[in-house]
Image 1 (cartoon, rainbow, N blue to C red):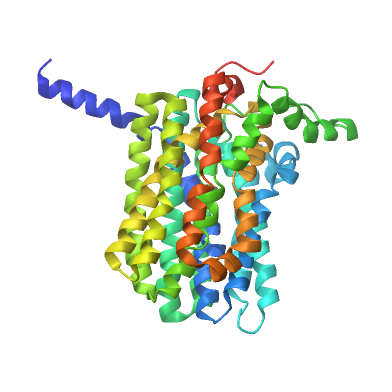
Image 2 (cartoon, rainbow, N blue to C red):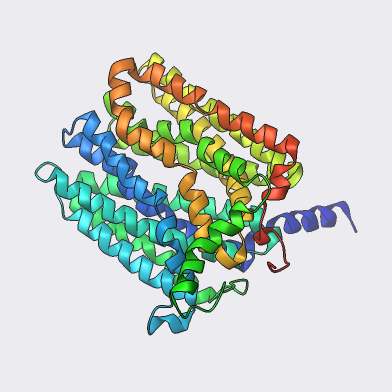
Length: 438
């Protein structure tokens, strides 16, 4: 074989995992997963700030994200309750359709409220979007993990993150552009169509082959088992409590910082168009590059070392916003800070999500991943909603972002200690294996 032929074969081998149907499905699932987050995240923050709502009230709205952190409370329903009529499509596919319709309805409801005259009604509407989006995420994550083979978890996580970023950025950018032209009501209504890719993916790919029913449910005992079973199985593993502690700690600083960026940009005087170009645009491409690099690191370094590298980068990235706040308004400074933060988040989106996916037992995919993903950001979201606005007003943006940088360190140290103790390998579930659970 010639060098050119060898190079072509090597290139095709590298690309092939990304164009297989399961990773492609993960991409479209990610698109739909990302858009509800954008609707009650940066987009709603901008909308509230432009309506003259004070910082404490704006950051309090991030408590709507706490609904995502409570999704493990009803994730067992997605695992075990068969929907009437539409349930014939399959457990996962039927729930994808229903949850997608709920998200579209909730976003349409948020479109119809006016924060300037009905702040409480806006809060209720945001919580409804959070609840519907969280339910959508429960199904999407379970469908993704069960559709991917063990060797596809890294690639699938990367494709899912590509989709998530495209969905959140496209919905956020579309909302900003349309809001400047037709108002926020029309902008939110237009964005509701981003629920469709996941629903269509379920219909095209069908029910996952690796989906396993835990038990037949005939009475209250079986219902209780469907609720307690996922927790009992997880906490029987060696070092499970330390794993949970890591999940709780690893993203505190990153979550606390990310949900306040738009307040910083608004106070620094950036326009909607500047935010769309430098925040959404530059951040989008930096995130995509980060995902690619994350895939390379995961393949070359393995799960453990690649996760550790991504944690270090994500921790340091918050420091760039302290520099931006100290520097003052600068388009290049904003591009650099956003670029570095999104590059680091892209790497973590592959490596950390792949690790979290590998933690699941396939009998309880929806419930266990809901617990893991909810725990991953609950502390940071709670702190953002209750204290972030007050801390910014008291300490200023520079010291606030320095604090978020320091808060990343405990998670990094804990993961390193878990690596040395062998707890990372001991913590994975059957999602990382072709063998069924005992």
